[in-house]
Length: 41
Length: 367
Length: 71
Image 1 (tube, rainbow over the protein chains, first blue to last red):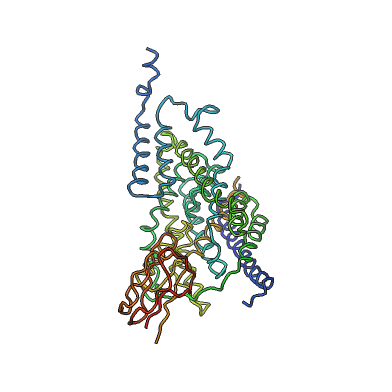
Image 2 (cartoon, chains in turn purple, orange, cyan):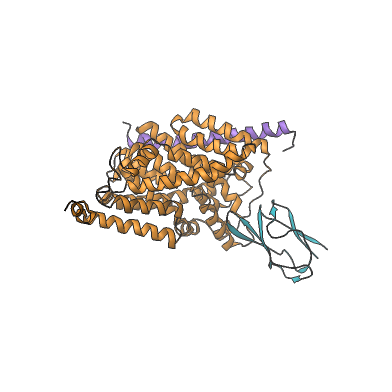
């Protein structure tokens, strides 16, 4: 079993890391989707 | 004589009567005050009938409520199905239009972790503390999902705490929102986000589910159902499935889920001093989550000219759309022409994803 | 000197509170838009007379759709 501190640190950094990746994915998504549809951003 | 012996009246205990009162209070709150009635009504009723003696409703393999509880909650079916419906109801547009708002949904999870820490130091086990912490995510199904895996004996208390505080968001949040923001900040009018194409809205659930499940596989049951529901909605080609997911399926599962959660709250399970701590910690979690969302928004404002109204940080607490409505109301008090509602939906929805990720990480580390 | 009043958010027209020809003042409530089960009033940006009402109760509007024209 990990310690509470382990969970705390892994947890918070995990959430922020996951959300950051999702943020990057959203930005990429909008660029790609707009290119496909031919819109200007 | 046999008939008299079989009467429940003679098998009553004071604990049971106590639970009746609690069940009736929840039903009252649901009907008279309209506190999250969709959940609190069946939960309250489930508490009532499962605390009537000699019914065998909760007897293993036999009881009606046991069957609902076992297959729906213990087998982790109900929460993902609710997420299917929630995904079909969710419009990610406001989030995709201003992606940076997603960080406010992440910030709100700080309440989860601080509560986890506090609960642990109050004597709860790691698993129990995690379940109590996740209340701060303001997400009923995720709380139930995590509790069923990590701390089933706390499921009832945590679920009732989560749903009660979600209903109380209009009371809990505004004082914190006003405390942490200046009048000027509350008046900030945000610039409209970009237009979001329907192609984007179709790609998003696919990208999101793959990314999140690759990072946190334990969150798969919840996030995949969420994104599937969203895909039903955005593809616009499966309106029958979309409609069922949003309405019939969601309502059906809600009925069973509420009843099952109530059924877990027997007198010996619920009438312990830990439950008072859980309710206090749950409130603490909601408050910290509200604060951390607002504070991150203020912090982000230091680095950008396109200012974020910090009030929308409070909507990172994923009581959808209750928290967004609270933001609108508090913002309108400062400037009635300020329409923050749709901006607030960005963090509101992001918060749901954030809570699921947090739950997934807890599961990965503590199971 | 016509001013177009645009929808500040997307939603359904819950109620139209003014009539064509009515004289209004700045900050009067013109239309109520329902979104997420909340009633959101749209206020007049200036004084004037209602020249045109482009929406009716129950219409679905997007952000920036023109609701009312004021003269």
